[in-house]
Length: 567
Ligand code: AMP
Image (cartoon, rainbow, N blue to C red; front, top):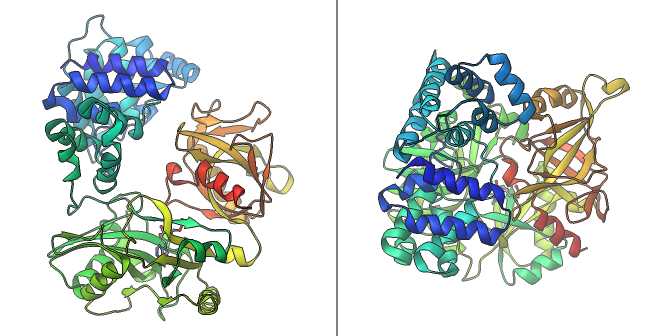
């Protein structure tokens, strides 16, 4: 298949916003796409060159692509920069300056070239990446150059996200959206669109219902619901519940196969290299042939006292890992198991899973323990446990259903797990993970930094970030110094296409939605100023940066609306 067939789809998608039409265009393409190329075509249509969790990226920024465009077109770099500044888009810049009239490159060839770019590592890697891209841009049409450049920088600017692709696969290969639920379930344990496309094309719905758990393929983490009152929790979770300490650290999904151990983050990245101490600790203290364990890793001091999340974040590094293992020891608190000795435990109840988890823990040591918990339905005991946890410095508690249907709902925020945090006790609303999309210059004492930032929540449907609050309090001097350093990388000349803000909102600087901050709020009110369904967070207070969360994992507009309705 020629690459320009995919370009045709990109072109059509770019012109429309209607979800139905997007799905139909994709479905029509999938039906016609040769089976042998379906996998790579699906990756490209999702704007990637592999599954998200494998994280294969070209590693090229706009500035490297600009250099390749200059070389491929023979134009002066300053002219390329000028056009880039005007368009703000590497794709449009390439389209204007490079490209032959006739295109005849195959999808495979383009895909392979993009992978070759991704593979180049080490010194001179930037120059080699530029050469490969230059050679590619020299032999494609200008439209192809546009989308190749966008794929390279990882910004497709299209409305087709993973959900639309899953819908379209269902329509293309089963004739309707009927397979969508099965596809969703499969996607939670196998977040690989290309693989799912191949499976459903080959064996229809059977191909996806047979998707199982695999070593080294991370499963989307189960998430917790937030609740407004304890009474609501008792209504939603009748009977006995597991009341657990809510640790303030980093989620870890540990995959074990014999002596092989890999650790995945909540963003499904392989973080094993950053935590060789945890890998060793698991090897020594967990007994099983194979397993997938779920837990939270926290920094601890020599006496085992839990340390702040910010301390743990210092362990997220490429260099000096050994030094930091000694400086900041950690402990993994396990609370769940998803797979044991070649059997999936996802559909088993929490009591069954917990029993299995316990059976794997040979020894509880200073580096791996079962999460602190009590099993009860007595509100007084829950309150006592909650207070004890707060005294210890924990975030609060997690309350989990022990009912027959308490399965592991991968990637889902439901009522089987509910979080109850100290902010409720303080009479505050809750904490929210918000995405910074703009900032206002600082004045007076804050002249060296930003005075406040514009924060947004994520709308999964439209894939846009909707403004929700202006945040100016809670920053320490250190935070203020960090703000420009962290944010300026993502400066955008104009309002990013995926930010939804009213005309009256005019920050001094716009940012592409990348950085997530945790914010404590006092009240959600109606506000005509913000686009989060007309809701705004009042009296927000900065708590910390959340480098462990991606913008898409920020609080969603749906959660905010649900929370407001419960008031
Ligand atoms: P939140 O990030 O506020 O939605 O809270 C959910 C997160 O709490 C999970 O993703 C875990 O990283 C973390 N967590 C801490 N302790 C527990 C626990 N005992 N059970 C489940 N999740 C926990």
